[in-house]
Image 1: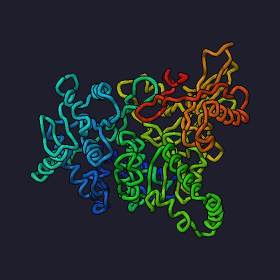
Image 2: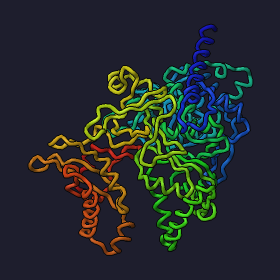
Image 3: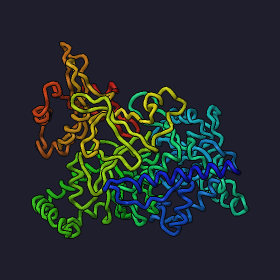
Image 4: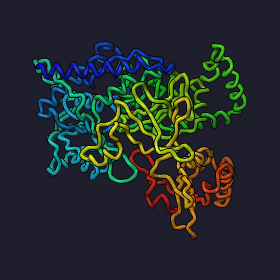
Length: 600
């Protein structure tokens, strides 16, 4: 018992130390200093249920055509304690449990329950059967919780007997069947065990330094690495992240980015629990507009592509209504009146705000670089549009823009208790971005060599991202180290920068910049393969445009980009691509796929 008490006291002291980073950070950007210490995910839920018991925690449609139903914090705690008790009763104490499926209460309750006794392994629901089998084997998962879409895949794995799987749970089933347990029945049976006095799960002590979360990266080259995260990593993020932007118990998230990614998992699902907020589960991409109106969220996390599409659609509709000039004038006037404490937005931007549900306050962007004009434009409509930066290995937050002093061109500043630096700077001042803090992963699963390559002896994680830091401490990205094109004269070309500039062209939907290594004469030939937006082309060229018209338009855009670039960075060849680029399951372009360099 003494050892248990010692561990607990050590964990509590650590949590209080993390909170002290916030209290002692002298920067004026640290506005919210009411962080409470938490040691692990189990305590996270228990303490929030005590503080916010009757608050709505989740909103879910159990019937796709029905209404959103509310689940309170007290109800979540009871379900999770029952579910965790059921898992332990099945002999899974200390073991790994995988979860796969859409964003839903069943997924979240599985994550929360497993963190109380073992290690959760979130899986990408877009993976094929063979890769799923591979990740089950590599993770050594003893159980998996899945949706009906994956029933036969895992049932076959269990029958084959060539994976460590022992227990299958179907999150969509009403009753147990054919050796597969139903999530609903598991929760009910576990709650019955608790009522009969089974307290093994409730009293189970969590080792917050052990690997509790195993996430396979969705890299664009090579096999995915298993990122090992502890509950310390995640809880540190929860305590320090909401200190530079305001998040309250009456806020509501809409969750639609995949939960198996740490971006959505930590920053939406777990962060909401920490602050006593609620989460509504979007039914899918095609239901976003409908669900926004139903849920009326105040905060949303998304990737640049979604915000760009919404922003361009808004202006397209404004132009169709002949109100572009009027709206631009209102924006200019509102910038002035806001400084005087008068916001005209509620009166003039009502229709735009209604698209986001009518209550939206904060739009957080991550996952890739976004056009700063779009963030500024969304801010003009009255939204607090903020960009951040992170990686799975950082659980995931590495930097964020403070709400009162955002810089739309920057990925932000480090959180309290974290640091960012740039090493091996070139003549342009660009080098590799490194980060350190209590959020950095334990390492790569069963791969000490790969771990040693990215985490140095002083605990700095070498991200592989290139960029720089300005005099005010704001960091900027320029590209990935492994993607840099080095010219024959030793100059560096960052393809992501050129792709970003191409992305600002209205009729360009996606681009891929690479070097033609077979170019005659050994010269460095920078190639841009570009996909276009047919609707945008039609607006510019009319309905009867030809391929020659498109190429001429593309070269006009490229020439404008080249005009501001030194000779070695100029795009010398343009491909008008007709087929979709090859992407991974995270929708990131696979840069080194030969198909993406093809003419067609």
